Length: 515
Length: 90
Image (cartoon, rainbow over all chains, first blue to last red; front, side, top):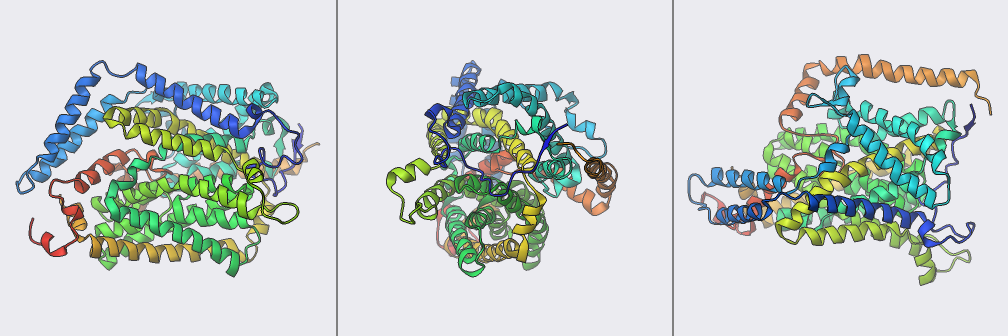
């Protein structure tokens, strides 16, 4: 058996469309960024067509019923004793109507292993039914799509296909490891196990050549990010009114920029991209923000996995400690929920921490996190512009020209933002648009995106070397950066939550606490 | 390049450790009362702690609807900046 050594650490996440000094010019349709955009768009269009074809026959009746329930809800008498119960009932009716309006047959063909306790085989059953056919469906869909992508790049689809079998198997195993109930309920996400499995192979026997033919980290990440654009819906910004925007959209950029500057000027972290990925990961929303930022600033693979590792470790600590502080300090469910939502990195951990305080805390925390998640599109785009304009100098040290900036620009971020804007527009087109977006995202793109990120994390592990992590962790600078940045985040998020929900909009707190 | 036997042994040792932890240690940890309470609490509340993005969380749409119904409530209280008007009025 032959093997290759782990790739050198200076191999960036993004490398195809920009480092063209050494690569001969290729037609645009062979460039990875455009292929990622094409595959992402193809998946979204196919999902949209399938959703439209499968719309319920009584769609107009459902829309009518939805409008009726909404107008009844507006007419509810707030002084009535049954106001809260009636409102709850209306919300339930809306939920039921919206789910019947957005069927998606593809959903049953895209799956991932579930939760288990002591028998890992139970991860392959859901509601007493085997998910093996759905996993096979997922495998076939991804294999076909990416074989086409690889062939379009002028490489061997057959070699890719053989390697993809192994890569998919390792991704599946990562999901199984992440599905063990203790691991799952303490938020140790699949990303960690995917990188670990890859590292175990690459740092023992070395990644076999047949497997490395399928390790397309950049391609998986870029396509996954274009699909993630479908979930970045700007209409959700006002979900918690102005207080939500202030906690999620004002504090976050301040923390991001301050942490990055602290890393540059105080800690003097040698790698700007590592500094930026950790800053974004910690201040915005953990894994997804780290992936988007790393791709936008061409971070090294090891830098991305280190940032994710830091985020996951601190998330586990914060999801246990913060609910305790909220309860002990008596800051209340609304301010406490907003504080946790603005600071804990992943949505699942935010909801779990909120649940330990109360149902209102859980809803407020998760909604703040959702609003913060939307920031990811703006952050990725801004980082890409900043990086190509100010960080990457020309050979002569001068500021690059507009053409040069465009040539270097990671163009897949335009696909990410374009999909986000298109689906945000679609969602704003009444309940029919909203249900179409919901069926595209919940039924298709979300599952494909999760798998693509998992495949990317396994690939990162397979292409990485433990020695590089040791070098990056020297002097503990990344850890100090994370701790200092998160401390600032905790302080500013609390102050903003208190200012908004206790001083400026105190009635919002009363309304949110009403049953 | 040929793979040395000690590298293969390292791989199997690592895989053995993973299997040992996941198949024996973690199932026992699940039975510790405080851990069990946390798992059951999350399950009963419909919380999926491994959700990375908001769309990955199964109950997110319901949280959003519930919050929205309060922000857009006919009382309009959510947007009233005066503290006094809310106290004791409900």
